[in-house]
Image (cartoon, rainbow, N blue to C red; front, side, top):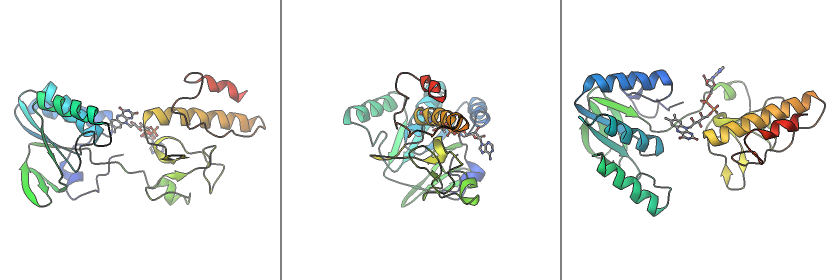
Length: 224
Ligand SMILES: Cc1cc2nc3c(=O)[nH]c(=O)nc-3n(C[C@H](O)[C@H](O)[C@H](O)COP(=O)(O)OP(=O)(O)OC[C@H]3O[C@@H](n4cnc5c(N)ncnc54)[C@H](O)[C@@H]3O)c2cc1C
């Protein structure tokens, strides 16, 4: 879920894309607005995609993308150049190297720079994990994700499996990113492991691949 506690005012004054209903509410507001300025906070991939989409669909609206880093900062120079060119073509203003310190009903305040006026603020400034796992006493990492063993079982409570955004699955390069591409395979792997356990077999380590080998869900066969 979106981290609406990141800075003051997000909860009260910003839109988020946490759910289909939230996205619909924003889309309705933008359609009613017709003209004006939209500030999208967060220059990660969600912010880039949202800013581009809004500018494309609502040519009457001015769109500003604000974030700490350049769009696509973690990607190759070629990808970054492509993103920049696409945003320029769509008329999206990009303000980077600054952080939003507060969201107001009429715009956003920036740390060390002049405030930006906005009719609508969309917050895509990062996500947080629901506090349920930590509150339940499972071992979690510093972001509240359930720390798992290689089979995706909680290291503190092996009867509990964790998958998707809720899980901190350690890989050679670090912790598996929370995406659909990792969420679906880990979900399938956990389901297969539970089925194996019910048949008296041991769960297998997760391959760590974004998709199970041999096709999307073929490993369901492993449950037998
Ligand atoms: C705007 C946006 C764009 C994205 N774009 C991409 C993309 O292009 N590609 C990509 O790979 N990923 C993308 N992601 C990330 C991707 O959506 C997530 O990584 C993925 O949905 C995680 O799946 P999940 O099943 O772990 O969690 P979720 O999809 O968040 O599902 C969790 C479910 O658990 C339910 N739930 C929560 N608490 C409880 C409870 N206490 N009891 C019962 N149910 C509960 C929730 O209602 C929800 O249905 C995007 C995310 C956002 C927000």
